Amino acid sequence: ILPPADAADQQINPGANTLFQFISNAARLSMSKVTQDIQAVPASAEVAAALDIPRRSACLRILRCYHDQNGRLFELSVSHHPGDRFAYSMHIDVEG
Figure 1 (cartoon, rainbow, N blue to C red):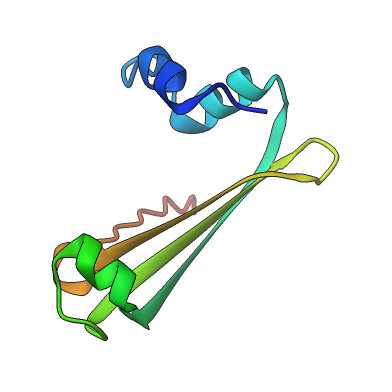
Figure 2 (cartoon, rainbow, N blue to C red; figure 1 turned 60 degrees about the vertical axis):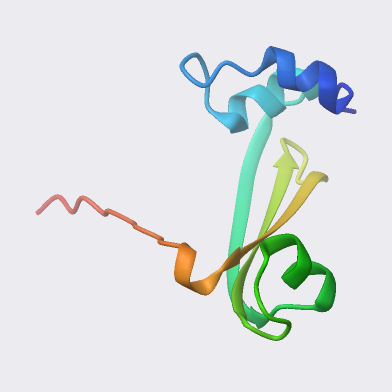
């Protein structure tokens, strides 16, 4: 559904849209939901080599699922990050 990676790279403008908006526009879909799961896992041999860390070292796997207006999954991404090179920050504003 999305343009080839090299074409997509040329279209991404970090200051113009969010990545979610870019994916929606490129796929001509109305995105309704994105889920993100973060899990600590041991690095497989392939992941360890790519991240330049010892095999079975702690790393974080991030799985993102992009769903359209009908609830259909249309994009899935998986990324791995070495445990000591990852930070996650969330801010919640509570009206009271």
